[in-house]
Length: 311
Image 1 (cartoon, rainbow, N blue to C red):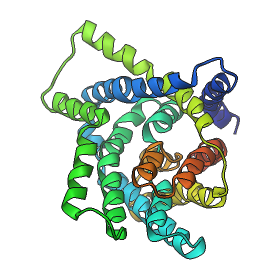
Image 2 (image 1 turned 180 degrees about the horizontal axis):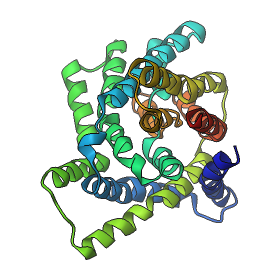
Image 3 (image 1 turned 60 degrees about the vertical axis):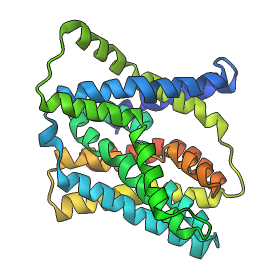
Image 4 (image 1 turned 180 degrees about the vertical axis):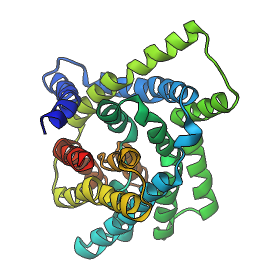
């Protein structure tokens, strides 16, 4: 247990530092958005690119890991919608937002740092194979479901086009695409270029954790905290549990490989959950609270999953 605490303590200490720095005005709140933009638009694409061209990506693309991760996410999406509509009496559109809050993982700002800290760089190929599909699959499914639930929704074709544009304009996708092209073309970086990507990659972990900690100051608990708590439980416990059962018991994936996909599934909801809710103006308070509650609670639940995966 001490080893697990040693793994996660620096992670959440960096988050706490970011939160405290903004809370006590030692770091400008407006600067957090710029910091996260740097992580998402520059540092992380460099990390994705460099990791892909220097790893055995083709071996890491394992359907027995990717499949259970996304099947678990879809099951959680449905569970979240049903609970939101049937138990809490939300409209179907609000239910979609709640379901999405229990589905979309913070794979970059929280997932990547914890994966690297827990399992080292050898976990990156599998992690990146999941991240590469994450936004494309879940954002598209979320948007299509929302439009189908809305009576005043746009046409399905327009929804698909909007989803494709959002995914294609994501710098993370650019980094992954460039990395795959470089990998399959046998690209080798010369020393100055390699040093550049190493330096940019090394900025991801501290900047991402400090940024997400500072961003938590924007989210306040509201009357919808109970729904947000349910969404957080679905994301932090149900999703990785489904992934565990499918990977270990059904597909018999070795634990030393399956744990990468299971732990990534145990990450809290990402900021895109709030972006999705505000885009449709449905369930925004639930989305914000799900991020806040899930990120804080993940300090405990991630520790639990690290213990389970070490048995």
